[in-house]
Length: 115
Length: 117
Image (cartoon, rainbow over all chains, first blue to last red; front, side):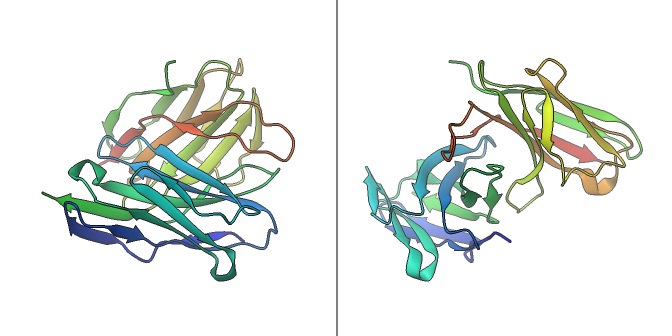
């Protein structure tokens, strides 16, 4: 069975601090996709990134970066120089390849960035 | 391009009453999903449609929940009768047709927040 664990329930930082959101996953599949979504107070899930299990290269997009380590089954997300607008709930998710495309989500981490 | 549209955004009902949620996916997206998100949790899939066919409804509580996507476009999710534990946000998502062994991003709507009193 697939499972995603986000151990951090809530994180609070001050603006301009760097913050890392942890994600650990479990799957028996050899190929899979990993995702991060952002859910602002408005409620809509906003796609941030998709990573194929074959691609362990870290990725950077502006202030966002992702560290995928297959050896530890982790897919961590770092926000550099956080801003108040980054305040939201962030979800890590997992999906098998070529199957139902069902997304299995973690419980989310609520990030609050204070001015 | 318009996103996934859901209505209503909020619904408050008393237990044992029926309720229905509506979803209009992004134009051209043949796959439609309904997820339920309980407070403090991540979304969980209820049902997935490929066009008008429900291809995965294994997690839909069929005693009280039903869904339809008659023309392969809009979809309706119904609960009858509602229970206190059904209070949650119901999210609809859609994605375009996926090529074999690839993945197409799911685009989510804003959700319907249901409160059962």
